Image 1 (spheres, rainbow, N blue to C red):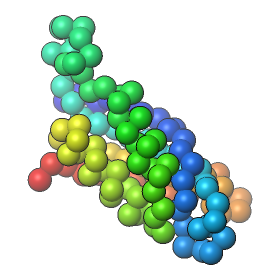
Image 2 (image 1 turned 90 degrees about the horizontal axis):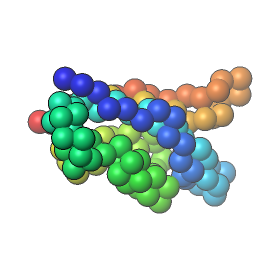
Image 3 (image 1 turned 180 degrees about the horizontal axis):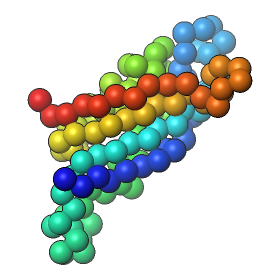
Image 4 (image 1 turned 90 degrees about the vertical axis):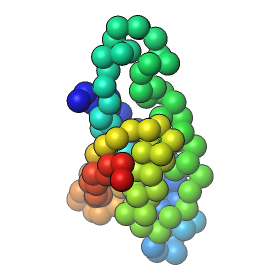
Length: 117
């Protein structure tokens, strides 16, 4: 199968367990790999036959930007379910990076892989 990806999709959101984190928006970065078959889109040259990464990005910007999770684990799981269910993606790998969360590190985060059940 083929992979459509989004790298370093930066979104401002409320995320974190500390009181000060609940009062400000912080930047998270999403890297997303989505398995899909690009053959039909390649033959037709029609966006309706493709995984529309712009539509995916817009949906994630809206969802993450309006969310207020305590843990990046919860954020990652919710994002993965949106991709699997709404965009009918059979498998994905998602990296959620909370930028500048730890002094001396560019970011911290998690990587998850999920598939259709």
